[in-house]
Length: 267
Ligand code: HPA
Image 1 (cartoon, helix red, strand yellow):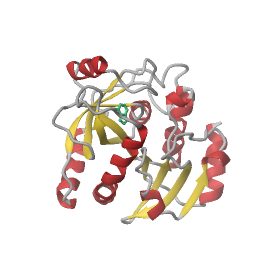
Image 2 (cartoon, protein in one colour):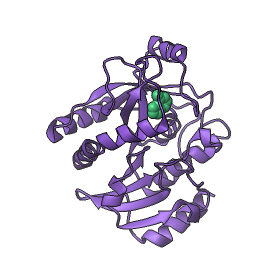
Image 3 (cartoon, rainbow, N blue to C red):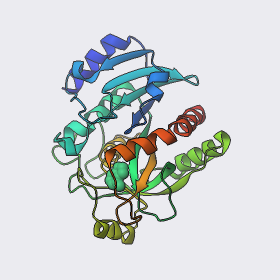
Image 4 (cartoon, rainbow, N blue to C red):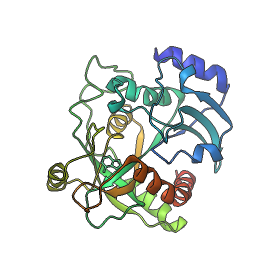
């Protein structure tokens, strides 16, 4: 299936060879509207699913940004949509085969760290996989990566520093911290958020970790950026809705785009 997808995509993009991949999270897809040289709808790509979440468009966008060749996922597949974990990470394997060296994974997340505010951006320094699933379960493909991949530096400190420097250059304030992934689609209870804090999380969300595991396994440099869209349950007394999450992502989208463009420049 992977080979069929690659063949199809290559037939559409000719000799365009992306070196950077970006997965655009909920409400953060606008970068791919601004920069779009070629696009392919997910529904046309063999092996791809269709994203069912509002705030996600569902296409693969190819563009040149700040002199770099980039492929963007405008919308991703979530485990909570009922896709198998293998389907969730399939596009990452496709990006690897297309030649992507560095993958920027973005998401909307809830702030567990009480010092975070809605619309803050957080560079991910590490993650906790609390999904009860691992995308590498099953037969290993040794051409992509090893059976027992080391996860001690998924978000390489060199790249965390690169993002922080890009933030300074672009005048965008950044938080940093550990992202913990749960399956969703229900948001966490206050007790679960207290647990998340105790075990070392700064933010909680429903994505990113499967893609980061596969990208790291396949030898890609991984950068993670969360848009803190709300205080997680119990951290503030306000209830949360998907509409609030999208609204906060909207507030953050201009500085998010500035940051990503500066990051791309520095890769
Ligand atoms: N929890 C999990 N995922 C999220 C949240 C949250 O509070 N906000 C945005 N995505």
